[in-house]
Amino acid sequence: MIGIDAKTRRFGFLLAYVIPLAAFIAGAFIGDIIDRHAGLASFDIIVAFASLSTASFLSFRRLRSLDRTRSMEVKRIVSEGKFDDRPISDEERLYCGSPGNC
Image 1 (tube, rainbow, N blue to C red):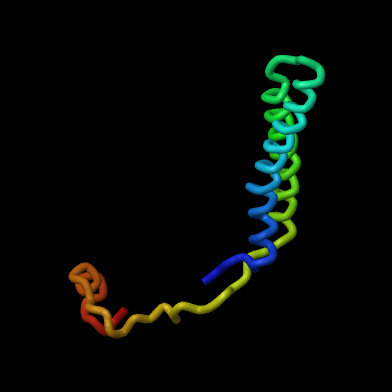
Image 2: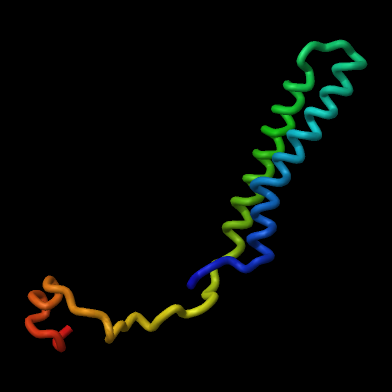
C-alpha cells in the first residue's frame, strides 16, 4: 500500500480545509465589527469572502509546493501479486492454453 506519512497528511488537511474555514469565520467576524461601527451594509459578507479567497489562494499555493517537495512512501505490502488458490477463469484458460502456462 502506498501512502503519505501522517505529518504531511495532517498539514495538507490543515492547509486545504481548516485555514480557509478559519479565515472565512474570522473575516465574517471582523467584517461584522467594522459593519457595526462604520454602518456599511453587508460589509461582513464582502470581508468574509475576500478573506476566504485570499486564504484559499495562499493555502493551495503552499499545498502545491508541499506536493512537489514530499513523496509517497510504501506503507506495507499487501501481497506479492500471486494468488495461487484462486480459480482460473475461462478467458485465462483459453489465453494460456493450459492452467500452468501463465
